[in-house]
Image (cartoon, rainbow, N blue to C red; front, side, top):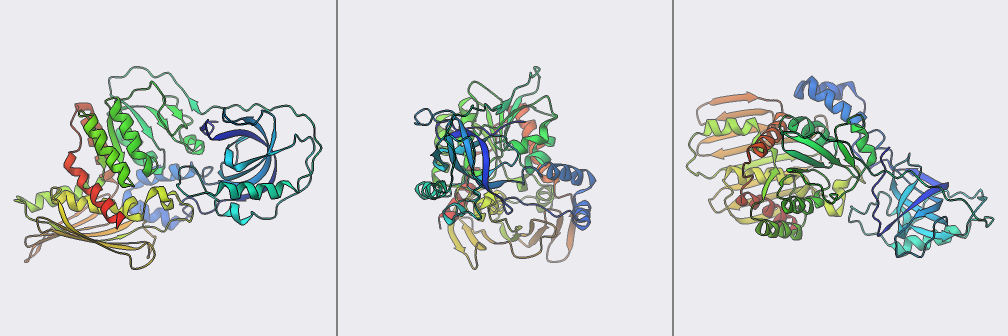
Length: 492
């Protein structure tokens, strides 16, 4: 079993000896009910193969879904080099978000305080988490959620006063620490690739879409429970490190982890002359975006692809064919977007992930700029009528304008939903839920189409992987204007 990667400068390794309190974290991941109706609805939309792949992916996440927080007594195994700790010492610890089946723990050093060596533990138990600890249930170092470390230590010190124990020496337990699995990779004629992030999207879309054109050599995923999905695959190196290992070079980097990590990994790819394939969004802050632009200037032979699937959809191909010669006419776009509500501790809610406008709304913003050949914008407006619901408007220098209403109020029956109208000259092109297409002019409906809504994702990664094989140049610099626009609205 793979183990969590450890930050040697800030985290300790300890063996838990006794738990004083444990609590399941129930609102961290999207967990669908086991429903025949749910399966039937998806079956009609996306087909049997996609449904079976999705079920396999979700079933593999059952262990991942069982995270817990807790307080316990543990024995130190390893600690930062500048720490005053000693191996074998007993500590009181708090874990805000941890796997349930590990026989040892990796804990931020700020969540640990000293105890005497212990041979017999008292029967003391904690009935509930102190408020200072409950505030950071679900916390990880990737979240950007502020944690008051002094408050945490003060709470642990109060608890430690209730622990009685006999002082004695105790043998140190040494865990089997394996944060990566290396395998022999035979030389291939295909370009090599590495993947960062093994969520449901990567399992159901990226992996099956690139295998014909690229040799995927390595998968990085910080949660060992997610890598269980690939435990029977003996042709991949598996790694829980969030950062690339020194000395490993790949032709293509597929970056599909936490949103705020995309730019840093893309810059690593540029340094070794690799192609960066970046899942949306490119950046969650202005600084990240600026760092990316700086890297493009520093590495002039860069190649990157931003994975906005609407650019690759068959619906867009129908639109281009039906529109004919555009002659640069402005294209107005109006859309209503429904997102599924997110659990309280879901990572899309982290400060580091930005708002729902950055996390998901960027898709429709990008598509508007795409159909207008990335014309510059002259005006932005943003209104938040209720909670995190948002309405945005953009006007371009060519006269085209955009309006989007983004909400999570409504039915979850089919997941994410959208209704798009493109209006150009005397024609209206309607796209519904990424599967239905209708084109009409002032006299008649002249085109109607229906597609599998998941095909756009597979078309995207298949084309990108083929382009990498052919040495294509990647996305243009002007396409970055949509990422810039999303950040302008975010800042508002």
